[in-house]
Every structure is written in C-alpha cells, then in structure tokens.
Image (cartoon, rainbow, N blue to C red; front, side, top):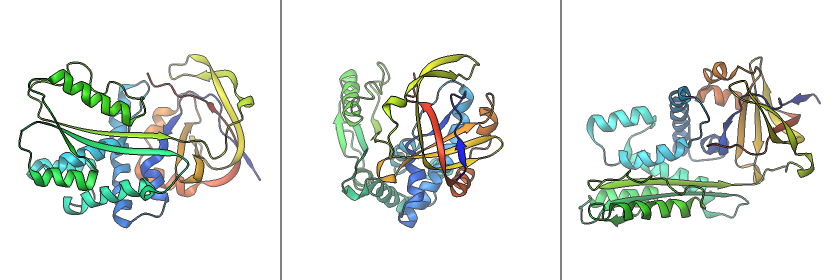
Length: 305
C-alpha cells in the first residue's frame, strides 16, 4: 500500500481539535442533533475567518460559544432573536432548537455510558439574587442545558461573585482555566452571567512511542525556526492529500472522537488554505479520505500563550 508522508515541522498546522461537531456528524445521532452539529460547523468556520485575521495562535471552542449563546437566545425576541439565529446558523426555531441542544449534549456524553476518555460539558447561570428572572427561562435553561441558576450578589459583592464563577470554571476544567473572568470584568450593575465549560482528555487510539520523540526543527509562521519535541509514528490512518494541503484524521481511544489536522504544503501556505475552510469543504475532505499507512511527525505539545 502507498505510504503518504505527513509533512514534518511545517510552519503552520491548523488543528480542528477534539472535533465535537465533526465527530458527531460521523456518529449515529438523531436527525435534529445532526443538523444542529452541521449548523455549528458553519458558525465555527465563519468565526474562524474573523478571528484568524488577528494573527498569532488561535484556540477556541465554537461549540461552547454556540451552546452558551443558545441559552441567551432562549430569552431573546424579535429582531435580536432573528439576528442571533442567523449568525449562529441555528437550523430551526427555539421550540425545536433547545431540545436538539439537549439531545446533542447527551449524545456527546454517550448518555452516561462508560468510555475511555473524558468529555465533560457543563453550563451554569449566575444571576443577581432577588432579581426576579422569569421562571420559564430558568426552567428551559435547566431542562435543555443543565444550567441551574446560582444567585450571587453582584451589587454588593462584585469581586466575590467573580471569584465564585472562576472557582466553578476552574473545577469543571480540571484546573486548566483558572481566571475566566479577570479582575474588574464584572460591575455592580451585572445581572446575569452565563458560563459554559468543556473539558476533554483522551489517549490516542495508537500511542506515539516515547522512544521516538526527539528534538527537531519546527518552522514558525514568521519564518523563524525552533527546536521542539517531535513525536513520530507510522500507522494505518485516514489521509487526504491535494496540491495545496494534507489532511490527517488522528483518532482518540475508542475512535469516537478524533483530531483533524490540516497542514499546508508550502511554508507560506496557511492563508491560502484558510480561504478554503468551510463546513462544506471539511465534510468533503473527510468523505474523500482513504486509509493509508502514514508516517506522522508532529509536536507533542501545542502551546497557546
């Protein structure tokens, strides 16, 4: 069988990390959850197109943003609701959307079944105590998003409220996010804060041998070079190669989730590849992938400052 070489130490690796919506589209899910995942993919690439202009490293979770704003959407009406639905690419109205989010979250959680990886999704509402939030809104947030309301006193204890929210996020992300809300980010007139936290940890389906990791040269976006720990393996993997880029699907344990890596063929090829990124193209690339014996070389850590 032909062997495809996944380029080593190239300047820019675009990583579609822990592909929540990508993985969902590949699994057997309910029709509404599948449509919601596809819409979220569209929103993800629209947002990526905006954020990528800022330069530097970029790491974000479009599912977290969509999930949190869907709770906000539950309380929106009129033009505000219409605009939110358009930008977030919600495929159907609220009475069908919110149950779809609940279903998607349960299916990502495998309905509580045992699994060999950690994927935790948590939502919470933080409201000014005695503010009088509508009971229907609170009930919907709890039923569809598992987001109970915790009352805080933003008026009189603003910083203590911020610290309470940060402590919850710290716990839900296993200590990975310690200061979601920096000092001074809340004010005494704050009335409601919505938070979403996702924690993901998994082993590769096929482990990279520790003895195959070594310091090697890695090209950076600005043309500089750095010595980093590069890990290596040779496995039967899904792979796609074009004149402009390579796509590799690296499965995590149980093969339910994977990391999709898009690698430009040229050192300065990232902007051209970014222009081709869309939900439709990603689906096509995944559909066109075939299994080859692939030599993989990649950094063993992605540092996002």
